[in-house]
Image (cartoon, rainbow over all chains, first blue to last red; front, side, top):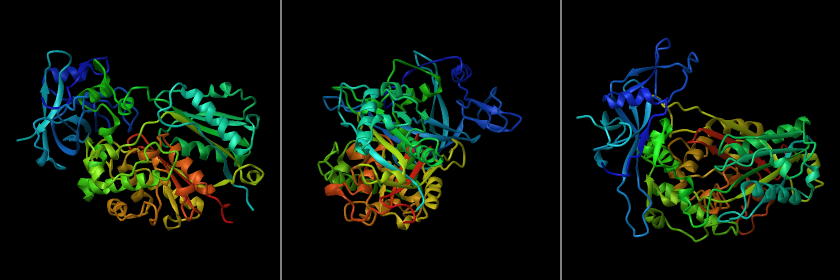
Length: 136
Length: 388
């Protein structure tokens, strides 16, 4: 894994269903079935009907790149800096956008619309998480 | 002549790496300075609007700190970087309606600590992370820089905006700062300096990012027909507006491409009876060079997608067609959220800009920007009464 170390993730009740999904290599997001709308995992209510009990539903795990940044950590006093990290907004096939971290990308190949696929990481410490890699 | 509302007092504490004062103390000091600047006493205030930065203080207890009594208006306001404009417009409406006569609006923050980098004040770190916001931070979004970088990159991909064009904004802003004794960064910079400055979050270099400052700034708002008796030339409020686009994070979003300036600008300019061509000076919220670029487009100073070319034309610097951020802005002078552009607008409208005074200052546009381009405010101010 290149770039800034990914922090240790803990569940807190609100995120349990999401991390149950990542642990099983599944991306789950929010859905309001009556309104037929999909939302990012952090959505708290449906703007269509106001429902605050949005259901979790499996997403396809495919996405496209919307925009990206390469972040550079602050150099240490000895001049060394952590390797850059590729961060992005990705658009899931269902429509919602996620702030995401990219993995295995070629900087020169980054472009709006680049096809991506969810990849799951199971660290030794903390909850599993999802990265996005270029779809083959 | 109609009785509009005016800014009659401006108070600025020491700004920058100033330690040993709490945000509440800074705020109280700024209000006292603003009242004195207006030629008033604290007892003349009957309204106080308070906003704070990261520290979460002060709130409305500031009235007690100042010993203010029998206020008719007291509130804490928050639309992030758009708050200064929102406070002033609320104060203006209050004095025009008769709900209050003399309203102080103040912002204070003190995120800098001794021996700590400016960046670390806005940087998150933790041994473990909770919630979806925590997950995003854990994945690498440790500061607001990365979110603005996503916006800037999207604009570049869509319109061909370049890092050199952003750099032109950094350079012109520093040219103004060199003429401002209040500015924290006065050493001239070149486009090469901008390009050579380290990456923070591509496409943003270090010199695309604003400073971090401790301090407070306050203004006093009153009725224009009263302002003539006071100590300073009144700064008349011709118009105000807000825009909160509510960009959703989903397919079709305009995130990064447009801002609330596209709404708040026309609202404020219509109220003021002006068009973008009438604006002599622009004081634009510049948390990043990119924020200036996209605001210029959304206000109609140039076409959508042309902000880069407009900035690179030299229009924004000393001698340019649209003097912009004439005090050095947040990039080079001081970072007091929306009070940075507002304070410089007051100085320019009064003609007190010294070496940096714009030649023509009849109409000055002030912007505020909050969140990640989520909230926007606009004020139109002038040394003249509206319609005079």
